[in-house]
Amino acid sequence: MERVSRLLSWTLSRVLRLSGFSEQPRIMEEKALEVDLIRTIRDPEKPNTLEELEVVTESCVEVQEVNEEDYLVVLKFTPTVPHCSLATPIGLCLRGRLQRCLPFKHKLEIYISEGTHSTEEDINKQINDKE
Image 1 (cartoon, rainbow, N blue to C red):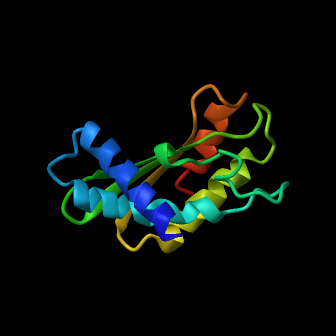
Image 2: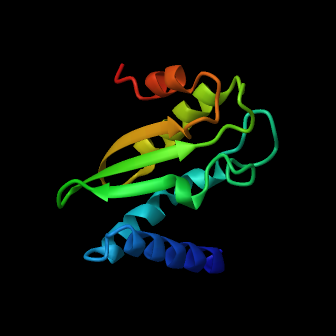
C-alpha cells in the first residue's frame, strides 16, 4: 500500500507541475491524495472496484485551489459501456463518498467523460443537480 501511495504521490506531483501548479504542488498533491478514497468503491454489477474497471483513474481527478481554504474537485469517470444503466447511481455514489469523506472545504463537479455514454448530458445534469 505504501508503494502505491508513493507512486500516486509521484504521479500527481508530475501532473500538477506540468499543469502549472508548480507554486503549490505539495498542497495540491495532498488534496488530490485525499480524493484517493474513491478507488475502493465496488461496481454494483461486478466484484471489481471502479479503479480495476478503469471507471475512475488517477488522471480523472483534478483538484484546483479556489482560495486558501476552498478547493474545486473535478472528477470525470468513464462507464464500462456506452449504454451503462448504472452510470447515474455510480456518479451519485462517487458524489456521496466525496461529500462525506473529504476533510477540506470543497465544491464537487462530477461528469461522465465526454463521448463515453449515450446520455451523458442528462446524467451529468442529474449528478450535479443541487436538489
